[in-house]
Image 1: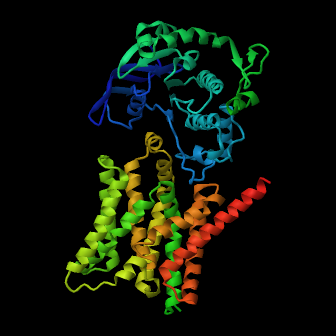
Image 2: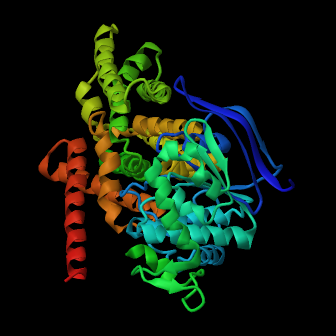
Length: 264
Length: 268
């Protein structure tokens, strides 16, 4: 397979004498969305930290030469005592001009926020700002650790559709971390189920049917998936009403419905 | 002109306030108020050290405070004890050690009150040189590392993923804080330094939209506290260091009141 961005082989992470994850192997190609799912404490974030070089790990991590990674951390808490505009947060480690920042904010469906204080944003707006921040570096690979934290369910599927669109327009690879297969299912090409090691992997449908998945998340979750499968055919607006694909407004960048969905 | 002790006091105080603004802002953002306090407590040990090594007390203070700062950063990396436990241990341990050392060193007579509460009226030309030289160094280095330091302050992991070394930033900031404490001791003393660092920064928070503006406003608020505190000390014949802190406190309360009023009128 050509276009492999990152290839992980037999990765293990040991923190404070405890082996958090072991024998992790997978790769992500450009244009591909790979989801790591697993319960809380399964070691998903440790895998991400190892890929970013933030924690020491054993095994091989082969990155395409010159690979640029855009990273959205699981939790970003800004001290209330620290005044910070959205524009200043976007320029945290690199300087961008106003037009570039505005374009990135429009791409994630949250225009007009640049001069707002980050403390005044809703959960969905804040996650979009973090996503815009990651996109500004023109990444080949996006690593998103629970990118829908603090976002309600409608807003979550909105955000995942946005991520799917970004993958299509930019052709970048995406590594998604989630504890919830339902919401990532529609947008993901490959699912890797993690509980300290790889329990099962494959296409979302085959993982959902895998006994290892049922053992990890319980049969109730597996049955619930059948209900959520219909998500591909339509979208919900902020009030939860069904929007028909052919007549409803497109949840495109800058669309009022798209960015407003998280306020509910 | 600089032979007037009141003018030297004012100039020295303003120099310290200028540096304390941005440093104090970072202390507030990083929740390190008690850390600054702990560093300052080790200064007395430095006084004894300076006497034994026959160097100016400020150099001894700088040495002991820097040493404590580095020890703390590395102890914290080990994560064996919580930060507040380590700070309590280092702060009071080094203060006690300093007092014992001063008593043990033969021939050393120290005006403890001057070190504990400051002696701004005794600032001489050499002190002024130290305050402005050290202050320029601190502000210069801070300007260079401002962006990465702010990134580490907001999210250490994100900063590291984007090529910044958080440990280097923490060490650099801690050493800048050590220099600031060494030059500020003359003005407000060991026990009140933290107040001069954090009260002006906290006071102006409500009016700042960006971190940079908060740092500048904090310097201005610090300068106002110094001027008002010195004025008050002359008028009411009160000790200068504590008077400066009281002035900062009054400024803080007044600004909070003003901010609440503005907020109230905006929403009515």
